[in-house]
Length: 397
Image (tube, rainbow, N blue to C red; front, side):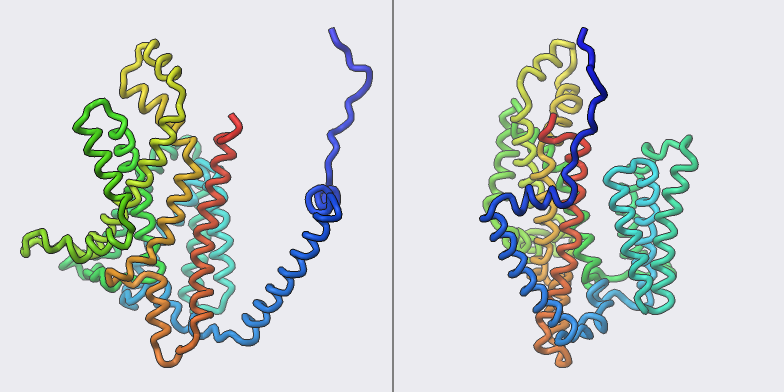
């Protein structure tokens, strides 16, 4: 039996200066590179800050903020957009209290961002709405923590899934219902449209991509050939072509009496395009699972469906988290292409604002503002992916 002669010393920590010396000033070459990078970064930031504070005319953004956010949505019906955000805030707060983890990061970031915006001198109604969202996030968290007996996790997933049609119901309206008059989808625009296209594309393309990946590995020739054809044909053309066909070519092949809204056609094109790429990501994860696990599961008497959905697929999805989130980020940015279909998403709204005589030559301010919005959402998805990978131990076990 081994005995310890004396008390163990606590683990040695580097500290701030130790980390700097180890990572940035470990040699004279690294020190020169670090100092040179700091000098270049300082020059760039100084010029950027000077332009943003003294030269830029941010009125092109502030005076057209409603257009950037909701496009041409009727001003007297914007409360419906606010109600949709309130629904999401409540679900986010409940999910934070029930699950924690990555959702806690999203909930805290959303609450902090809305609380900060509430300090900006908007109209009183806007500031009260922002405060209401913060209250719903915090209240939802408190409710889920205070009533642990309720199986929140069982009900929240259906709640999130049902929130999507509820949001579309609020935004689209109902003919003959006075409080919710119909609003043509041509009036949807800005960040609202960009966000809806991204969410629908992500939520709908993932299960479709999983089915295509499983079908590609099917032992049935008809299913395998069909899935391979769908994947390769869609992946062989750019998204611009898919959107062009969905908005212009597809209506030529359906009877004139049948009218499918342009927004739904574009959404379908985005879902099919993203599903084909997700299918290849999932297929890579499926091929990475050792065959021994499948054989062991079958030796235990599990059926083919049980082996696929309980053993193979969960591990495959865990392995392809980085590639899948990268595809989602790419999809969010690719929504800027729907302008060719006549939809006024965020970037297209920016171009429309620049066409106004009062804001000619203000391209820098508009594109910087749009770039910041894209960066915030893309970075949020990337950070959530890193947190999820750390929680699941991707690459470690």
